[in-house]
Image (cartoon, rainbow, N blue to C red; front, side):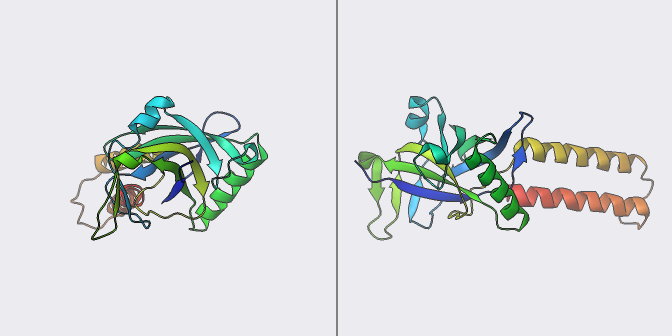
Amino acid sequence: MSEIFYKSFKMNEFSVSDAENEAVIEGYGSVFGNVDLGLDVIEKGAFNKSISDKSGKFPFLRDHEYDTENLLGYAEVVEDSYGLKGKYTISLDTQAGKEAYALAKMMQKAGMPFGLSIGYMPIREKTSIDQQTGIRYLKEVKLLEISLTPFPMNEKARITDAKSLFAELEELKKEIAEIKSHQAKPIEVTSDNDAELKEALTKLKTQIKQNYV
């Protein structure tokens, strides 16, 4: 059997879905075009065959433990221009799911966010190595599973709950519009309204920077 490889990625937010006893996180499990700490570059299109073969659904595990006790739930993934975009559903009815989610939230609060790690096998005939740099370019991989891990490798790929973030941004837009509607003086002029507007704009910039930069 071919050797199984793993890649880990940083995540930055968890959220609970509307469904009872399920926690859902969203974001990228892999990004295209950057060199990771293992000197690998995953190229766009590398996951397409696996996604097609498995209808986009894969096991979501804890730390690449291939047994039912460490099965957290399932991942639903697609490729876009940036990377492997997914929604990862954790069952809170299982002991593994409850423990993993509780720890991930605790570490997130402490500023030590969990990450994602993909388990995969390179397709040898679709792999090339730069002899000068040692960088391996992966044009196709067989995706096996995605795991929740406390040891992220690649800082470029993050998980963010897009629905939660966009809701916050929309709320901020409304706040800014409401403040502007009562704004009679230029924003450079100091007033209570100016301060509120600047605070809302600062919060908006921080949200965007944390989740998309």
